[in-house]
Amino acid sequence: MTGRADFSHVEWELLVRGFTRPAELVSLAEPGGIVLETVHMFLAFGEARKRFVSFDLIQELLQPFAEEEIHRRIEEARRFSQEPVSFERYHEMVLNDLRYAMETLRAKATAEEVEAYQQMVLYICQRVAAAYDEQYQGQHDLQGVTPNEQAVIDDVQKVLTGPQNWIEKITEDIRQFFGGGTAKS
Image (cartoon, rainbow, N blue to C red):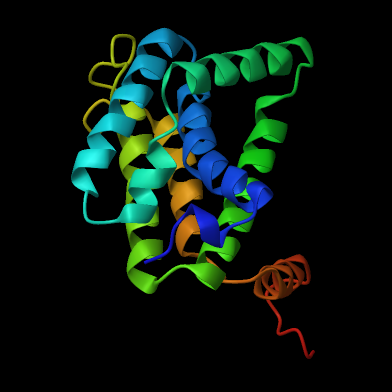
């Protein structure tokens, strides 16, 4: 089984950001509800520990969300709010972090652990999205999930299941840029 000792400090922080930041991004996709959605994010961490109890890696990733970790994240958010970044830029930063996290995980973890991580990230994102439904009742198909939140979840899912390395991603981007042709043409 893969554990924290198999990753450098930087890699471990990427894996943690890989499941916390997408949930934050979902919360920011719609105005309002951020306090409730933050509470639900931390509740989802606890629920995920129960759902993925057979994966030591997931247990270790979710363990640090004790009081000190929460305070550190709040301080990080405070710093972030003092240096305004557009939603689009934050969206891009989060997805890039998630790509790096997935690349790292695929290189060091088992296929089952990678799949569990993917499921955990989506579970937490969906849990956060469903937390705040006051303003948008009846305006979307999914239980408590607005179209903007679902768009973020879809983007996260594409990264989780997308190209497995940056060469594939760059090649895919080049193909799209040149109108869908092959890289050889």
